Image 1: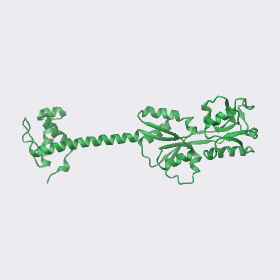
Image 2: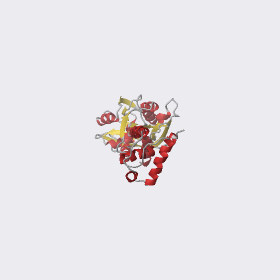
Image 3: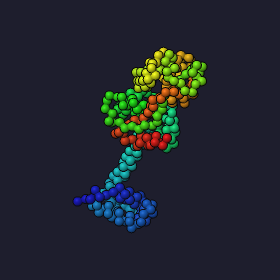
Image 4: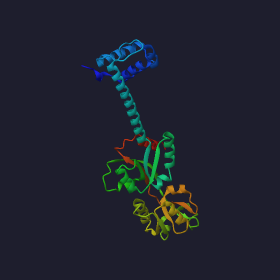
Amino acid sequence: MSRWHEIDLLQLKYAIALYEQQGLTKTAEYLNIDKAFLTRKITSLEKRLQFKIFKTKKTPLKLTDAGKEFLNIARQILNQFEQTIELCQQLNRAEKEHINIGINISIANSILPEIIRKFHAQFPAAEIMLYEMPSYEQIEKLRHQEIDVGFFHRHNLENTQRNNDVFDSKIIFKEKLVIVLPLKHRFAKQTHISLKTLANEQFILPPEHLLHSLREQINSLCKESGFQPKVKQEAAWISTILSLVAGGMGISLLPANVENLQRNGVVYRDIQEQSPILEIVAVWRKDNESILLQSFLQEIENV
């Protein structure tokens, strides 16, 4: 009974090399192994095959009929094995070389550039795909595995009705709300402003259907100061809100990251009363085993 299951790939490599190099001494030098070791490996291979590969070990080496067929198949096996390994490595690299990230304005205007810079330095070949979208859309895309990680306010995740056990998360940073005023507003020279003094102002705010949790916190904060904000206009994009404020259309309350935008025509002022703290979290699926994702999350820890 043949013991083919005891044959390893190196023995196939040695047998092919011996025939191509035509001699034990030359083959041993080519493979950088001991001649006696090579002899034992070839003898062991023929014993396990239960047929001779070589008619004689003397040069010129000649193959038996069975040996000729065996070496042809052995070459195919090694080539196929090498191609399979290469293909699997390519698939593995492909899996690692792209990461889909959902972002919101807060992370984009704050620490995201530093995270991306550090991550790119570690993985220069990785393709980073950024998608700016509302939190509810990020959550759905995480559920359907369309993005690897999302960045948004923590309360948006807590306020979802569906089961969130599939997610893991970590707090990335915290920020407060600030008052955004036109440059020539009567309160522009004050460093801290009481919300109570803004009761009669016209507000430019994000729409509730897109940024519900942010609007909820703004409304709650104003309510604590005794009024509901008079919303003159809504705008989905923070840049649009800043343009409207700069144009004198009204004032706004926005997350403090907007100060990084350095928009001409507006000033940012602190709220005199205690401002709610907005927690920005990174959220990902617990079952996402991507090595690239884990490396990305590690870079977040380092920022």
